[in-house]
Image (cartoon, one colour):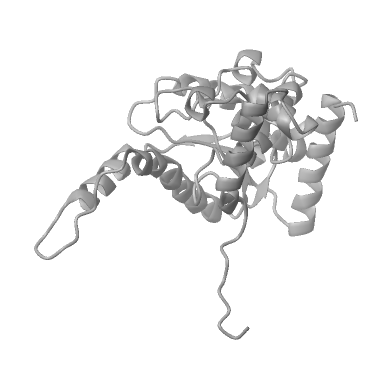
Length: 250
């Protein structure tokens, strides 16, 4: 089936509006990173619920070089916003886990664990603000990230509803480019986690285009890359499901 970006855009807007009516909420909170996913998510929610009901939360971890991009999104969409710097929280957590007192177990430093602290702290901030506003938290993750597990468990995987979870990264860009209210350069901005110092594709070792082809066509045309994507999907499947609850009465 041919992908029609305008039809997909309008369908998502209608579904957001229908969900708000079904669940009885008017406000949504979105973590604004300045990347395409949060930018497109925010724009869809604005079209569905109105700018005054969409709250953009910017959460730099100390200094964020591209924080101006996040501000541009909020300005372009005319949404209320707040900046919460998680730098001191992150530093405090590192200090506490690294501190050893008599008889305590040593917790070794882990770069990957430390990288994932940011998304988890951000989710705590977003949940706090969402509950305080009596709204819902809109998830911004896309299908490409979800498929290969390029997301943080109990971090950006946590939301009240996912807006882009059935669109690949390539499709998100196509939808974003149909919305003239959005700066096109932010929709097409090279994706990065803002944590590791690498682009998403550099960190994953596969391209979003290959992931898109794998999802939609069953193959990207490169057997070795297909195998890598399939292995990533299998290894990270636990991020997409609820935790298993063991049953001793079986």
